[in-house]
Amino acid sequence: MMLKPDLILFDNWDVKTIDTLAKIEPTVVLNSELATFERMQELGELLGKTKEADQFKTLYDEKAKQMKAKLDVDIKPGETATVLLVMGNNLYVMGHQGVSVSLYDILGFTPAPKVQTDLIDKKERFATISNEVLPSFIGDELFILSDQSQETIATTRNLMNSEVWKTIPAVQNKRVYTLDSSWNFDDAITRERLLEQIPDLMKQK
Image (tube, rainbow, N blue to C red; front, side, top):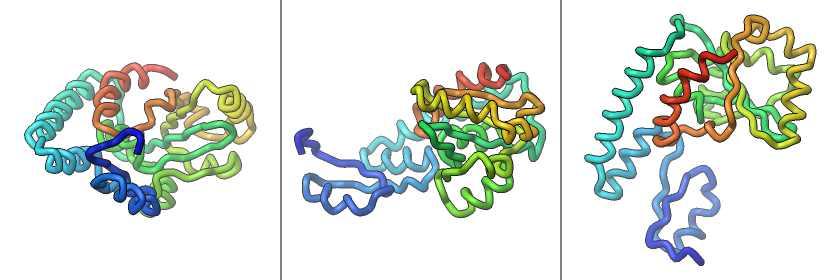
């Protein structure tokens, strides 16, 4: 109310508060289950900017093609990947959400089988997991997202020093990549910037 908005755009993640917001100013609920550019198109129609939305998508597709052309990585059909988020003392495996959207939809990785059945098929954004069950979620490639908080650093260190960690094939094959958790979004701007980051990311081990 202090911000005095003319319009409120709201994610349907928390439906309980929509009625409260709608009493402040007109509120439009966006479907968070829509893909990135479907959400953008929805916004374009709402704001009279469909042309700009289409142009952004066209430019993004061209940049994605250029990125894949210069990417010195051979991603084989069916090669699987998992995104693991370490936050504080918790471990989360990501579904079709955040940076995994770019990995699956642009790079062409396939979700690890258990990620597909336990999260994506059930439309779960993420799931909290324990060290013990972690190996069952990990694909051929493992992408780890974390921040620089002391708690997260300690959790990551303990994980990587654990016996369970050493049993994971992706770890044994040195196919683990690290990325700051600030990249774990699938909005249009982050996805565009990731096209510049992915080539450098895939060079690291």
